[in-house]
Amino acid sequence: MGDAAVINPVMILPFALLLLSIATIPLINKEWWDKNYPVPSFGFGAIAVVYYIFFLNNITRMFHTGLEYISFITLIGSLFVVAGGIHINIKGQSTPHANVIMLLVGAIVSNFLGTTGASMLLIRPYLKVNKYRLTGYHVVFFIFIVSNIGGLLTPIGDPPLFLGYLKGVPFFWVISKVWHIWALTVVLVLTVFYFVDYHYYKKVREKTREEVEEKGEKTHVLGLQNIFFLFVILAAVFINKPPLLREVIMAASAIGSYLTTKKEIHERNHFNFIPIKEVAILFAGIFATMVPCLDWLQLNADKLGIRTPGQFYWSTGILSSILDNAPTYLNFLSASFGLHHLQLDSHVHMEIFLKEHWEYLQAISVGAVFFGANTYIGNGPNFMVKSISEQAGAHCPSFFGYIIKYSLPILAPIFTVVWFLFFRN
Image 1 (cartoon, rainbow, N blue to C red):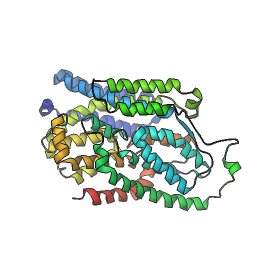
Image 2: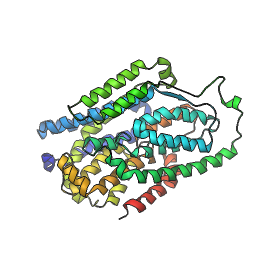
Image 3: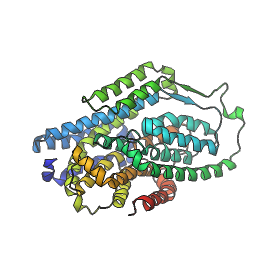
Image 4: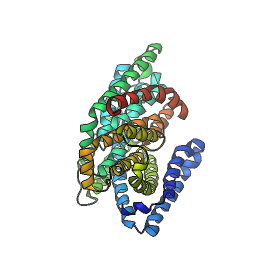
């Protein structure tokens, strides 16, 4: 990171413009974005790569970032494939109590499958058992709990935490420092959901079992062999040497899962590679463009005026609401290291940071994961869940309706309580 001193602040623009494109272009012209999103990703990414190789003569920095990208996308992709090979069908119709239990299970599962894997695995059975009274708030609370807040406990749970793991944060450090915050927040959000769901549940005339259920349907789980591949992937997370062995094992597990899963199961899950393809392409650009941002932040952290864990909690959270929470996490983690005159890519400095300044990492982790639930663009699974739900007949709120009707009145007060109890001082 020695070249950080000569990083031109203008080189932050490719990162900002790429994230701005991801946040706004799909809302303006979704058809154009679906066809052309590789253009801004590879275009802005190429600017950063060229700058480091030809202007800073620092190809090593980009090489290490490329290895981190491979690790990141291999984990996300392998979990996506394995989750796509498991089909869950639940018989009957749900109640508020059953919905709370299902969301709680989703919050726990998201720490093993990732928020993306858990969302893709559970959203369809969740929609099915609520189809006789399916409304927008069902989808929104699923995004709150399963697609975001639930995944706080492990590096597998949410992309920001896995980036921290790749930077040297021990695997079990996260759960040891945030489990109580996770438990309180999940309980508060589920309590609000229960009362909302119960209120509307009383208003709906429950249809007869014959009307709700398909003839001859049964509760079942298909593709159980994929549990084996899931455990292989989880075990591989702990392999650090030799380089890329972990990624080879994960990729082999994904291939094994795909080849051993019956075509019928993939069809029932409407499985395809389009979502993971988009994630892979967009994050290629994000990883490249965020390098100059990380280096510049690490050097100039003391000039930003963000100094306390509480300030890092709100700053990370607010930006994670409107930008992707993974690079936001890494940017503020880099800034917190720079604030204490430490370097993020040094394992020795990581040990010092976790011993003397761990409250900063705790605040950044919670802010990045929790606040990703505030908008459809805060975290990768959010838009995918919305799309699947609309195809199932749910009337999801608009982009701003989601924020005004749900995020501000429900999540904002709860996140303020979290700040008051854990980060105020």
